[in-house]
Length: 470
Image (cartoon, rainbow, N blue to C red):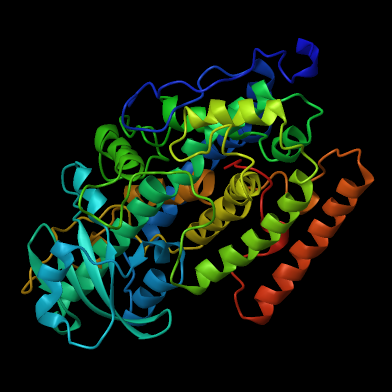
């Protein structure tokens, strides 16, 4: 084939070892075509340039007028842990340390789960700010319904229970802080950066008229420049090294915050909650209605992808080469000899599309709705012991802390949808594939209706983005 048959003339983006952590993070895509940068700056970067100086004084004033934290009731705490993106951390696989720590409070015949937020141990905090790894023990009362039993505070080596008064109130904030840090910097990044290799290789190695190219490329706009900006720009919110970075909300400097990504990608030895990354074939099990929501959309996407890829011949050299290229960069991705076995191609493509649309968007939407005065990133009191007295709530976050957090929510954490999944147009010329696209959109709407009828209204279909664009 001629180079003009490819998007960038076979000279497009390609993965390479990540510059900051070449052995410990997923590969990066650093060298991008100019047209992708222009597109990103015009539609996303410019928004940051305008909103940053505009909102800074507004959010600072808001922080002055409404400082500190708000009280989090036990019911709210339960809701955050079991019915939001933090439900991703619930697991029935208690490791040896979990069993040792919580054994005195566990009863025979009951089933227990744990929320393990150990990765925050790598965070080195600024003066006057504190973090602590925590483990929260849950008792299952009925399928995917839980009662919170106790919290292990690693920094003070104490098990805190609701009977411990002030210590319990403070411990809840440390759990929510750990949940926020691990959600945004440990688990959620696995939906971003490992999949960049698929984005780059698809654009460079597949012909523009190939069915697989058309299917995937529709979900790749904006992503590579966005990822590059987050990981490599000195203006990134990860770099909290200048006073004027009023949008950088984390409780410590760059090194420890960046190490959270390593914890997610490389995993933690002897900790069942954090295995090393391997490319999934379907969404991970989440013990919550949040997981049901994600799974039902995945099944809809899977059905669509299966209809499309069945037109690809099993001896397609382009797809085999595509798989071989990706296999060298992404752990667990099938190679060219495996890609046409069973439903392998359907599975890996469906997961990619689900990940960059539904899976990614709902996390941002859900986190963006959380109250920054109840789910802190910064806490200005040491982790509790059983006899700790909590400070006045207004002293636990400063106006500057709140300003930075609110700006980060507006500029980065909350969703800002530019192109929508429901508007996807794949450019297929085959009438049967065109019908598959029309059916897909009908099925997406039917999925939303079904979820609404079950009371699982985490977000609207019309708010789901078509790609990773925030």
